[in-house]
Image (cartoon, one colour):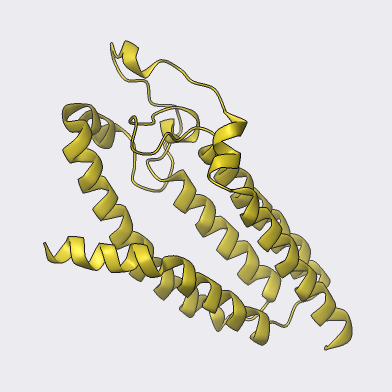
Length: 189
């Protein structure tokens, strides 16, 4: 029960804490052209992964094992990790790495444990087989295919899911954050 409470707290506060850490990062950033380019590429890869994942997940309706979910059980969080890492590289202040690691480990790992428990209760044996074969966060090299599971037929990317989950807001946020870093680099260096 303690894990559920801790995870529930983390679920509620992950977005507000993420925005607070983003604001601190912007404030303490010391961007340079090279860090903006490298960090921007990494952040864009995280954004692309989040978009791909959002177009596959059917929250609370089915166990998603297609698209990026065939490689990792948490592609949205892996995308967030890449987004955050890219943003930190773009900001070019190594001190902020500690803040990011503490936030990610303290918020997202408990959330992933709680969500895994919820999925195990709802999808029972299907989830157990999936969880044994597909890593929690770091992707496997080959896609997972549920053996003999016709109910989990390959489903393609659905742009309506991407829009329903408002994943485009992450793209807008990244654009503005990188724009602020560019302005800071040229006008406040």
